[in-house]
Length: 321
Image (cartoon, rainbow, N blue to C red):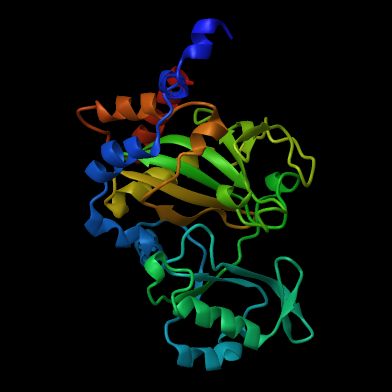
């Protein structure tokens, strides 16, 4: 690094790389493009799921919804048809409050970490959900019980316990950047970067992984499994991009994050959406968001057919990578 580079303020170097910060995200993309009245469409996972199904987008099957404490008394009966499932808050954020049951043993439930729990423990967890312990703003909530995703074998060597997901940022209905989020021992099997998961950049044009970041530092191998993170071709890639673009159409929000999981039996499934997506995806991809966002922002019109928007995303990726 020469003297001129050394004296250049960090924020100016980031600007040259097209890195977008939180203030710019909020002022230029969230406030103008995400009407507050439409936030409930993505903040409420039950409503998001209903809208997605209506739009023909595949989501994990909903088994039941617990809305009042009295229903917890019937928990054993409600869960009796299912050996494995996921319990999550309808208004949760950041992966908080999600409890994964992978099977049963001797009348108890086996959680993802191998620990056994009984009906009382599950009931206590659901009671906390209803009380708003994990909800946005701490407001009373509902508990969703749904199908447990069994992740695609492509992730066997690069994920620890939990289910990886693919986060894609979508602007004006056009996918702009994507990464796969991989659970680690540190993240307790959750695919959340702030809790210690790994973010791996994905080339939009090809669907191939090419870099990884962990605790905001570059990484080439999964710390728990030793598997190489780059060079993996994501299955169903065009279908995944089409699914994320279609999510924009029913959400009524211009700048969103869409989380897709790959199930070994059902293929891509939309897990949830985010009206305030984080920006660590830039680190995972080693590229800034601004050039792609500004290009799409400057377009007079956006193609209506989803396939054309997917092609636009791929073309843009080739010229801005």
